[in-house]
Amino acid sequence: MIRVLIVDDERMVCAQLRTILSAADDLVIVGEAYDGAEAVECVVRHRPHVVLMDLHMPGVDGLAAIEHIARFPAPPKVVVLTTFDRDGYVLRAMTLGAAGFLLKDTPPEDLIGLVRVAADGHTVLSPAATRRLLSASAGRDAAREQAMARIGELTDREMEVLACLGRGLSNAEIARTLFLSEATVKSYVSRMLVKLGFSNRTQAGLLASEAGLTAAGEV
Image (tube, helix red, strand yellow):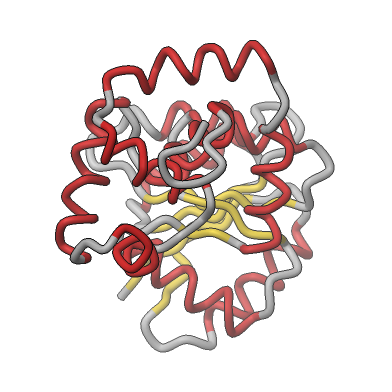
């Protein structure tokens, strides 16, 4: 069973998410929290596999909770729930280690599938949210300079793979684009994440956007 913790200060949202996710035989809701401090306590108490985390809550917000949870040994996968009223908050959440982000109006059947994907250790991305997030991260001169300095130690091939991540391509799509096997692409992504000090490919994709990587091998 996949253990899920729901965190949102709107109790109606929590109730809706509980109803949707409880319909799946392999998902169990282990708890609900209504602010960041309570979310951290619930993670310790219930040991969920996946946390659905709102960002904007009174008291301790979602960002502080994500930062705290990321320090736990073997932390759960934290998936941000957002309406994108503040893009900067979501950008910050990803740098703190969130495993992905979903729009709150994600269709129920998609939400169930994406929770399963997150539990398997994969990054969860809403296509619409991805486009919005990458757009929000573009055009920041200072961020671009920092990003360029950070990717300076990557090999040419790793840069090409990073550029593909910035375009939101899957491993299979990267393999077709660069004429590599999926196993080779996976190896490149893993080594690149270690070099960059990132925990997931979403963070690498955002860095590619900040660095201005628009196509494989191009800046």
